[in-house]
Image (cartoon, rainbow, N blue to C red; front, side, top):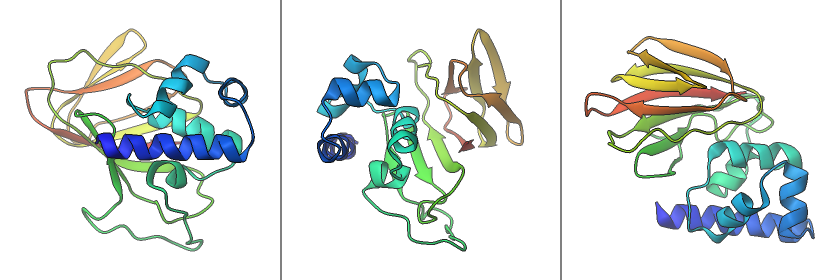
Length: 182
């Protein structure tokens, strides 16, 4: 996990260097908190997918390039076989597997997210756009603003991603859900 985060941090710094922006200018243009962005660029902390998506949209760089260092090439379709999508572990609790990493110019970012059981409190984040979550395994607690929702396999939630939100696996069992970030 640590190596993957450091590689993402290096790609962020490389993008900023190519754009010839200071970290303050880069963060301001992307609508990010400067200190939060600078922490991300060190590679010492978790880097949220929402931050990467905001940067990718603002600077018109694919999310795959930032997350995985790969440039999408397919324009008609992209097939992801079971268990074969490119993945990244953002934290010990979350693993994101991209389900459309090779499709260029996509309008949404679908992921299979695996959430490991943890006694840590739910970490909340927010980002622009909308999000769809469909639980495929386990039981998931989703905090959406002040409300806690419990989702079981087959349950789904579509929401405004500007709302503070976070997830947690329940019953000390791994949970998986499909997340589509639009």
